[in-house]
Amino acid sequence: MKQIYYIGMIAGMLSLASCSNDEYLEPAEESLNSLTSLHADIEGNGTTRAILAEDPNSLDRTVEWRETDKIKVFSDVDANPTNFYIDSFDGPKATFVGEDKVEGNEFYAVYAPLGFTIDEEKSHIISFDLNYSVANYYQNEYIIPMVAKSTGDSFTFKQVAGLIHVQVAGVPLVSRVEIRTNNNEGISGDGYIDLTESEPVFRLYDNMEHPTYSSIYNSLTGYEVLPESRVVDIYFAVAPTTFEKGFSFYVTGYDEQWNRISFSKTISSAITIERASVYHTPIVYGDKEVEKQQQEQP
Image 1 (spheres, one colour):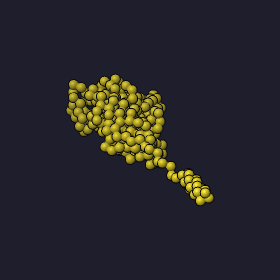
Image 2 (cartoon, rainbow, N blue to C red):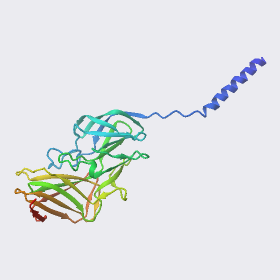
Image 3 (cartoon, rainbow, N blue to C red):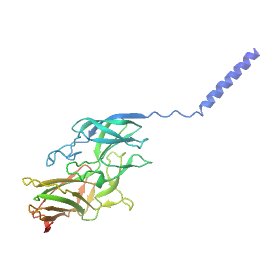
Image 4 (cartoon, rainbow, N blue to C red):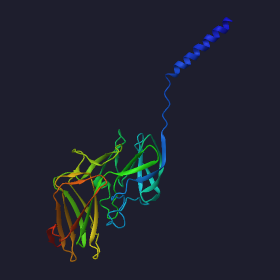
C-alpha cells in the first residue's frame, strides 16, 4: 500500500510541475487577416475625380475608376506595398485583385501613379512629392491621390488633395500655365498623409529637408487647341490650405502667326482650397481681367 502511495505522490508532483511549466510557455502568435482581393468605393459624388471625364467641362462629373487603374496595398505589420489590379468596375465602385496576399490587422491602400515612401516605424504614415506623384504633367490623365484603410476587404477611398481648375481661352497654342502664390505659401512639394485619420489630408512638410514650392506649372508643349474650340482645361493638385493673398496665373503660348504670347491673371483675395474640393477660374486672353505681359517672336 505504501508503494502505491509513493507512486501517487510522484505522479501528483509531476502533474504540478507540468502546470507550473505552462506558465513560462511562449504565448501563441495572434493570427493575422489575409487580403487577396478587395472592394473599392470612391467617397461621395463630388466634382473631383480619379481620372478626368471625356468632357472636362462637365464640372458635375462624379469620380470614376478606369480599367487600367491599380493601387498599392500594405498593412500595419507589412510595410512592403503589393500591387492590386482592377478586375471589374462600375463608376465609383470596383474590385481589385492582388498579385500576392497581404497580411495584417489593418490594411492601407493608396491610389497614386508614382512612388511614395512608407515610414519604417509607422507604416500608416506615407510621404511623397505632390508635384510629381500626381499627373500634373499628363494632358489627359489628371490622377488625384486617394487613400483608404480597412480591417477587412471593403475600402472607401478618400481624396487627400484639392484641385485648381484653370480654363484658358483665346490662345491657339498654349505651351505653359503656372500658378504662383502671392504670399509665398507652399502650394505643392514634399508632404505626408496619416492614413489612420478619419479624414486623411495631404500636408506639406515645413522644414529644410523637404522642399515645398510656392509655384507649380504645367507644360503643354505641342498641345494645340483646335481653332473652333480654343479652350484648354488644366487641373493642378494642391495641398489643402488657405492662401491669404490668393495666387497669380501666368500663361505662355502662341497665336496663329506663331508670335509668342505671355499674360497673367491675379486673384488677390484669400482663397481656401479644401480636401476634395475644386477651385475654378477662367483665363481669357484679351479679357479685361487679364493683363497682357508681352508679345514677341519665338
